[in-house]
Image (cartoon, rainbow, N blue to C red):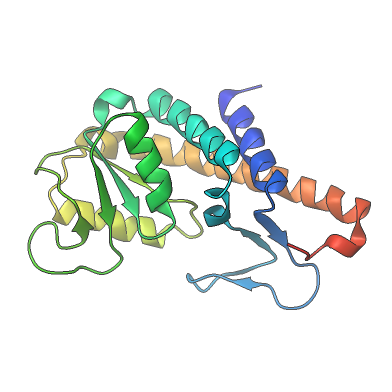
Length: 195
């Protein structure tokens, strides 16, 4: 089994076992801030309340980051407001890098108006968020990093490959979650929308 597939299966298992995956088979779907509607919803914010889950997810993330980007290519870690912040904080702590918080809206003036914290111009900043739905918020945060003069040349060059891996990883997670939810629905039809 490939590393990406193994990480996806482990991640899906953690999400389901900790009750952070919801499915609606009847009634209105979940509506996301992006405007998308879906019968599936993953609440990653819930996972920070479970030390075993968050530690396992951080280890999986670190394995992915080390293999796909290289820790030597990261000067700082930025967490996307709000759900990306706890995950970014744990990653920054484990790899002993500075942490900044990317704000959805700028506050103040200057190069770092959209960030809490500091990084020097030219710093290679790893952007961390909880999930990607349509990628629009990630593009907005990436544009904010560019305005803040982050020097992510190597990260930008590898972004296509990394994004392909992330998309593959997330699609496998969703595939695994759908399979698990289908099985759960057959095993306990009364529990479908309990979470």
